[in-house]
Image: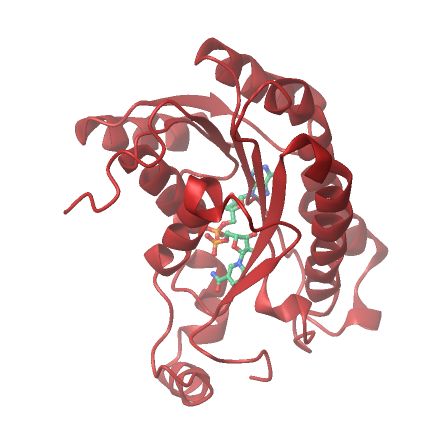
Length: 256
Ligand SMILES: NC(=O)c1ccc[n+]([C@@H]2O[C@H](COP(=O)([O-])OP(=O)(O)OC[C@H]3O[C@@H](n4cnc5c(N)ncnc54)[C@H](O)[C@@H]3O)[C@@H](O)[C@H]2O)c1
């Protein structure tokens, strides 16, 4: 692959949560390809080992940590790892769950709590806990991964959509708080991207065709359609962007 911006992130240290597959993996790989040292993480040790091995084969500078973002002691391990790499510059909060499919007011209390714990509260806590290191960086960047569904809730992803809307508010509020310190806080709202997460919406041919018919660019997104946006926000090219959400959705809105 050609390393277009091979040195844009040289010397920076990044943490990407849920980064052993899907969009998180692609973001970790892209930041590392652009020169960053990256802490790769997810809940299962085997997945962390495999991802780290795969990325190291490419010669990338990555280290692996097992981290359930809802657990304080696991989040701490992420920051110990970034400290060991020289101190944190870039935090990408990517982990998310959707334990139930259904309309918002049909969500069980359990599902609601889990969705808000992982998708919103853990993003808030990671951002908060990252500050002791990010404040020492000259290039502090926080990036939340939301969803196009945060703008227009998808009926089948009711509570999940609302959790993704909350991230827009968190982005604005944190950006406003941290602007004076030259730390940017931004958000990415992916459309339909080919990962495990979106399988239910795209696995049958008819569902896929229906989805594609709603996407002006005429295709589902690839994980690298998102990783490039994350790298931009993390880099000096994104230095004057803060409090924003970049939609990368092939032109679709969320009315599937
Ligand atoms: N794929 C899409 O179409 C799409 C669209 C919009 C937004 N997103 C968002 O992109 C992000 C990545 O999703 P993806 O599509 O790569 O799917 P994915 O299922 O591969 O990613 C979600 C990841 O979060 C991890 N995760 C869940 N709970 C966790 C926890 N407690 N601690 C750590 N990791 C945890 C999962 O193991 C999984 O790897 C998510 O925030 C998702 O909401 C995806």
